[in-house]
Amino acid sequence: MSELRYDNQVVVVTGGGAGLGRAYALFFASRGAKVVVNDLGGSGKGEGNDTKPADTVVSEICAAGGVAVADHHSVTSGDLIIETAIKEFGRVDVLINNAGILRDVSFRNMTQRDWDLIMDVHVRGAYKCTRAAWPYFRKQKYGRVVNTSSASGLFGNFGQTNYAAAKFALIGFTKTLALEGKKYNIFANVLAPGAGSRLTATVMTPEVLSAMSPAYVVPLVAVLVHSSNTETGSIFEAAAGHFSKIRWERSKGALFRPDDSFTAGAVVKRWRDVGDFERGRPEHASGSADMITKLEEAKKAPRGDGGEKVDFGGKVV
Ligand code: NAI
Image (tube, rainbow, N blue to C red):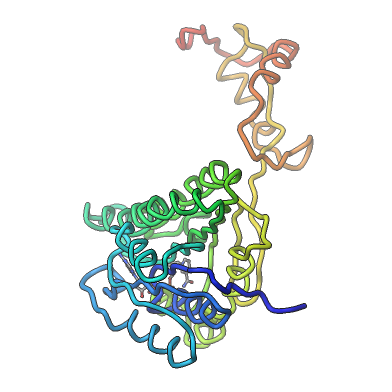
């Protein structure tokens, strides 16, 4: 099979000055794309700024015969980053929202700044960049977006309520972009990566760090943003050469007749059914449950038989 190419395309990589972003930028430039290497160049906690990370990656690309331009804005000024792409290259085809910071702290000790900075960089940043690129994508009926989530967002992680909330927000953001973008050939997917970088340097051993090269995440992103890709609205994990997809699962659940036997006690009695993924027919949900059908089915359900009763004004009696 011939290699995937991105000739004549403009790829914007936020946080492209280090770690995963750097790996993406080098790859796309090596496959014919013109790359905007955005990076604010601050600390891993989001303090300060420095032009060097983005400039260094651009120099590497140019030295290898590629085409790239540096952009030093924060992703919170995403409109200026997209403006760089338009001014320098006249278009934007691919947006990889990758820039990220950490401000890990237990929820009890979290400051307002810890919360706000994480939300700003990850959620507002992805929003601002995507918002600015969207009219170009729609007009040219082509766009590819990858938003970077995390296992923290998917599963939670001690000391990361801010980061986990931001990373999960990107899932709802992406799934809705996918719905709204589909008819314009704009596809958006979520990546939950794992790689050795300065963000993971404190939690991984040197051995694991060196084995988990950012380069091992690149092939998945390469496929997701390629013009031949038809996948959209999906969530992928990529780390250490292992790629997988995550999807929701809804239990069959319990159905209650909507009369005075539908009580909290009746729910307690059927609690196992509510969360049972083994028996019955769990489904891989891609939308909310069909409430109208459920209401019809509920009318035929057996009466509940649990303890206290509730009237439908909400009062437990
Ligand atoms: P990294 O720290 O090596 O690279 C992130 C880059 O983003 C840095 O160069 C930084 O200067 C830049 N950046 C930070 N704030 C910015 C802002 N406001 N505007 C523009 N650039 C900014 O980190 P790494 O590991 O490469 O992370 C990339 C993305 O992947 C992040 O979104 C991170 O949360 C996510 N991620 C990484 C994991 C890993 O195992 N490395 C695991 C899960 C998620």
